[in-house]
Each structure stands twice: as structure tokens, then as C-alpha cells.
Image (cartoon, rainbow, N blue to C red; front, side):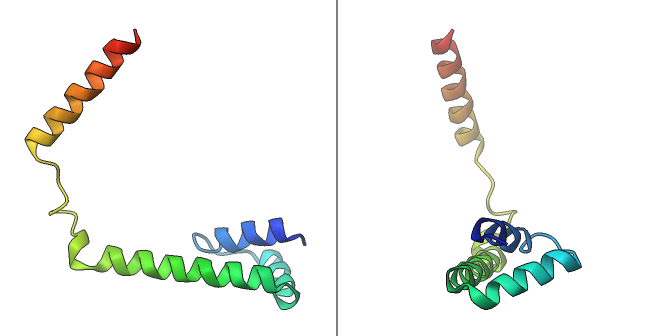
Length: 86
């Protein structure tokens, strides 16, 4: 297995369960490749950090809503840019 294949599988393992063949191949590659070991460790750390941020009080979906004024301003900018392109 190449490092490219291993990094792809390590990344996919964050979002889905790998099948037996994929787990064995990735596991064997990680036994011998220090670079991919580090990459896999970094992926896990990034995922954990994202989960901590998502679970924190500051990321409450109900408090992260745009105001009516902000929505109107964004819509106005989009409309102006679309008119400019035509």
C-alpha cells in the first residue's frame, strides 16, 4: 500500500467504518510508515478539536443565526454582483 492510499483510508476512517481488508492494509502500512502514523495522529487530533468546538456553548445552532439586516445585506451584495456579471 502506498502512502497516498494509506492517507486516503485514514481520512475515510474518520467518517466511515473501513472494511476488514482496508483495516488490515492500513494497519500494516502504519506499522512501517512513521509519516503516515503522524498523519493519522493529526487527523484524530483535528477531529477531536472540531468536536470540542462543536460541543462547546459557543456553537449552539440557535444562537448562530444571521439577523434580518445581515441577510438583507448579503442578498443585496449577491444581487449586485450578479447584475455586474451580466
